Image (spheres, rainbow, N blue to C red):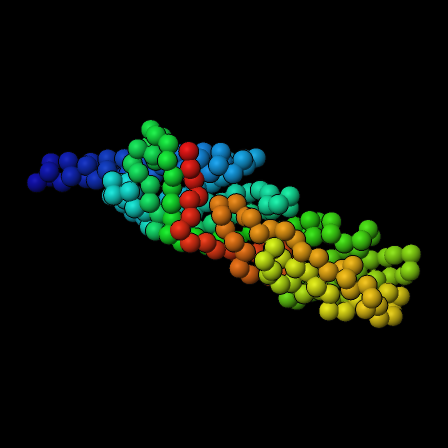
Length: 221
């Protein structure tokens, strides 16, 4: 009995090692494909969720695959910390082992990305800065006409994220005529991995967008 238990334990350990090794190989292959598909400056971090992995590998169906991209661009806008979660994922065994070309598809995806404030300020007149102000943005700076102060709100539009002033003052005087100069859209409609912006909110590190997609190809070769 003791020998049987030792052998059984050894088999379990071996299966765990093989399972984790298979997951590592699949994660590496997906990360390579994602980097190539979206011309990323660095290889993203990929995690295949769910245990055991081997049963998912054989079936070609995966519970969840998470992809994290430190830096990427969307329509010329620099993004940080692009994180995506894909569920109902399908990929063939040969594809994940790097033996053929093909696609990795997902039934649903959700994600987030951060637009640094420096990217938002590029759209503003020279000398104007922004900072978090609750759920809005605080606008401040100096111009030849005097100090500018104001508050702007964020919203999702068809083209990306729109910044709209709620009030603007110059040298302490309301300046409604300048509202148009402080209204603009950050064009992040084409996020990596075919994600579409669904929400936006203010964070200490930048403007964070929420995103989602259905029936997507997020890695192809």
